[in-house]
Image (tube, rainbow, N blue to C red; front, side):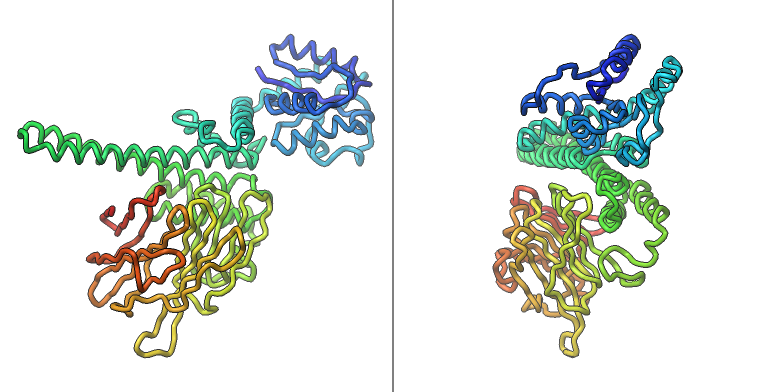
Length: 492
């Protein structure tokens, strides 16, 4: 059965007691505030907590409830936390006096002249509709509120099967009521990121164990065989864990794009879908979920054909690079139209334009630091210089201060000026930049690591790799650098 909260005016208490008794008899857990006392901060906190723990909020409509400040508070709180609302008409009111959130929902009539038993049966049917989904919404809201109250302490995040259930719930939330709240979405995303970080830590620990075991193989051949078996198993487990994490991240992005959490801002939702599609294609996983999220948005918004995503964009402008901070709060996009930052903590974020890159740039590369403090955009533009007819430029921007940290108008390697930048990443703390350059004449890649305020021509680390690299990355603890091409990956 469901947990119910009844919002009503004291003038309708006689009806509410009858309703309460009937619902309790049907095995529901019902919260009703019978006390007629002046509001206090502690009392208000208890009311809010009761609303959080309720699956459904029943709002008894009457002239007095619509005029009640407390009823309006309960209604607003329920709306803000995406609670399922069921309006019950007890006394007639002007339709224009009913708040839009209630006016848009089918009313159930419990007026004195109406058949109480028939109305109660209709109410029971409304309560039971998709109840498992609603109960899950309540449970994840309570957990998210607990996480928020403890200053987003990681120990309050979801793990294991509970996290998998939450991600499944979020992925299935498109078009269902109640829609996920912004806090619920952030909570589930933070839980997935924490789980992925723990997974990477475990994989690193397993790798060390495998290395130690292999180092002891000289003791006896049997130990070598055991170590080799363990190594192969660890590698297989590592690949499986990485694949599962990538699938979960792509599906979460797709669900975030489709969920109405971010209000009516189609721009942000399109960018999230593009990020999901990009990740799914790169890793060859969850392509259906990612592609479906983008197609759903396109089908629901026919006018999107007139523009792409950012102010002034048009169909045919070219590829869009998208990056998201690890905490899920900041999104960056870079294309021919411009360099933009989006605050995902807002329901309808207005993009912040980052200026400084060349207007004719193309072949864009984009990266963000894990905490979202720094965003780095790279572009390539052509010149009339016959010795080097294309140049790379890099702009690093501080999203907190809204200031450019560094601008490299001619990002080239002194020894290999014709090498073209292929990929880039920022360290988790935003203090280092890594970039890979590919030289087609020799089919070699040059990987350069330098401080964010330093000079790429004087790197702290510089290595050469045969072949063309697809991607570079820095581990969350800033201790490892990862390089990958279409078939291999390496770690330093």
